[in-house]
Image 1 (cartoon, rainbow, N blue to C red):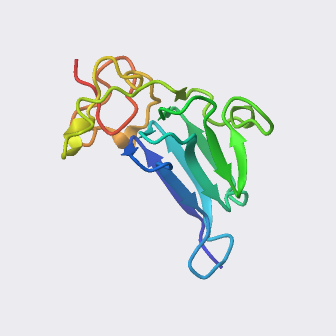
Image 2: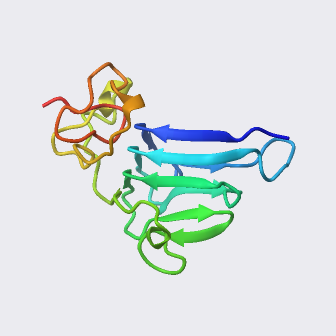
Length: 171
């Protein structure tokens, strides 16, 4: 009998040249469909890639997860909308089509298709992914006390709301 597990992905910045910034599976190495994940929370993240793919998130075997909260994220790809998520092999579009990801209650407050505007995405250090004042993630997050301070010790919030991503913008 497994104890319920929780996965909480808060205030991260994912930037890659691959077509899927985030892949989440409730599947374990013993090929057991339900690996025990009971709660999945994905909030205040920036997920961006520079490939020409629409794919933003891939989920497998998440139907058995009881609590899922996925919101207050920034999603960016140079591909044209609509972005899409794959859930157990079925494409679900963010804003259009059936089934509709937002219509299911996910990413209602999230931002799609707006360039995150980082300091320097060619930098070799994480500090290149600090937000500029023009970033879509500035003052757009939800309050998550366990992410205060940010990754480098900056207290959250610096503005009127938490920022999305790993770094809190400092005016």
